Structures are given as C-alpha cells and as structure tokens.
Image (cartoon, rainbow, N blue to C red):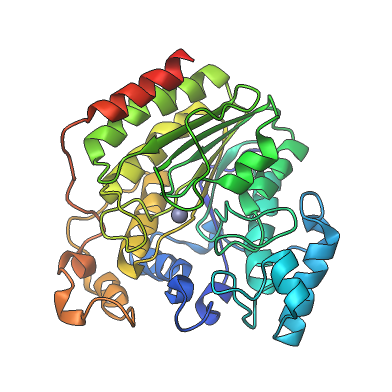
Length: 371
Ligand SMILES: [Zn+2]
C-alpha cells in the first residue's frame, strides 16, 4: 500500500444522534455540521470519507486504566453512577455527565484516532474533527473529555512507524492530558498556545518536560497578527527543527472571537493558516478538532479546515444548500436569533481580526526560544 493521494475524513453519525444533555456546552451539533456543509459544497466524495470504528475497551488500555474504562462502560449501561464512581473517576459530574452514549461516543472518536495512525503508516493526510479531546486522563474524565484521543493517536502513529511526533495544539485551553502523557518523552514535541489563566490552569511557560514541551500562555484578545507571529517565529521553526515523522494538530475552535467559553479574538483564517503551514513539514499529518462551543463558528471553521487540506478555495458567499445547513442549526439558551450576524449563515470565512502585536506576546516567544 502506498500513501493515499487525497486527504481522508473520518466521521460518524453518532455525533449527530447523541448529546451531552440539554444544558451542556457540547449540546450543540459540530461534526455533523462539518459533514453536511462539506457534502453540500461537493467537497466530501465517498472515496474520501471513512466511517469511524468504535474502539474496543482493550485498545484503550494502551493509555487508559482498565478499571476506569470498565466504570465508563458500566455508567453507560446503568445510565447512572454511584458516589464512588463520581469521585474516583470524575464521571457523572456537570462537566462529564452521564448520557446514553457516554462510552460509545468518545470510543468512536478514539477509534478514529487509533485508525488514523494505521492509515498514515505510509504517509498522507487524515482529518478527524471529532478528535482532539486533550483533557482526558488515564483514569479520569476531565473537561468534557472521557478519553484522550490525541494521546491514542500519537501512540498509534508510533506503533505504525512514526518515530518522532510533533503535537501542536491551538485550542484556547491547555492540553493537560497530552502534556502528562508525553512530557518525559524525548520523541514527542509538544507546542501549545492557550489563553492564560483559563481552566485547567496548567501549561505554564516554565514547564519544559525533558525539553520538548513549549507552552505559550497568551493574553485575552489574541488577534490574527499575533497568531501569525507565533506561527512564524515559534511553531514553524520548532517543528521544522524537530524533524517529525508525523504531525498531529489539535485545531480546537474555541480560540475565535465568537466562542462563548474563552476570550481570545482570532478569526478562523488564523486557524486555517496554521493548518496550511504545517502540511509540508511532515509526510504524515493528522488534524483533529477539539473545543468550540458556538455551532456556527465551529462548523464554519472546521469545514474550512477540510477545504484547506484539499486545497479547495473557499467561496466568498456560500451556495444556497450550504447556507441552509447553517440557517437550520439550533443553539438554545444563547444569543437570540435576531442578534446573529448574517455572515454566520452566508460565509465560511471570518473577516481577518488583525491588530497590534503586544509586548507580552513577543517577550514570551523570545523566552521560549532562548531557554
Ligand atoms: Zn478548549
């Protein structure tokens, strides 16, 4: 088998038919929007779409503790947890609620990440927007993440021939689970750009692990010009210098201006620039999703990621069929319908959000480069 020519999209209908519950930030549709928009635009032919397998419990034991996986399955079967399970494993909490697919849904995203490592054995590009659950811990649910599919992806890539792996994370939150897994591993480079002071409050600039952990906490209001500098001066040179056999990009959509859970101010073009710039730096490239809690900004951003990976130009105005996908999205409990800007329905691309580069951003980049 040779490296496939075209990028592959791993998806599943389980993300359309399941929800974390009526009040959870993840009640919104995300992956299904990306699938529907991509199909409406004619960007997702059958030969590029792979249905995600669901990981078997045993496959998860390469990083997760067997007793935790059993507890997660048991909670799904029972539809309830006892106090011990809640306290010990973090299941059945407001962040990590009991819901009918609470094992099957994360195990499907984990199955995609494990499969991605196999698909990339001889090179190529894989996109799994359901992935990116970077807070999951070996024996505990954490921050909406029951499993840690990025960790599983990295282990699968390694098992399939990639020795050195670069993990880049541009979600608004720090990937505490991924750092825990690989901070002492000289063959994994980890670069994270995240909002300072935000949950889980890990990811200090001084954390360096065995030398390959680079955490850049950024101030609120981060703009596209600042992100471009971070990309050009930090992300690209460090990744290039590392010489990775594979790159995993966690492309969380919560660092954009329109996201309700964080205070960064990027446009989606900032994310797309990162996606495009990393592509030539390795023969294996896996792009994952992550956070993102505004259904329009997530769907538009992640559909644009798929366009970038396929080198398809994004149209200025969406055709009717794609526009109706966006008009039909529901977001109860948030902004009133009348307050929604028209471009959420008619475009994929945000206007650029450029601005001054603040000293603190420049200084922290220098600190990381000079340590
Ligand atoms: Zn996040």
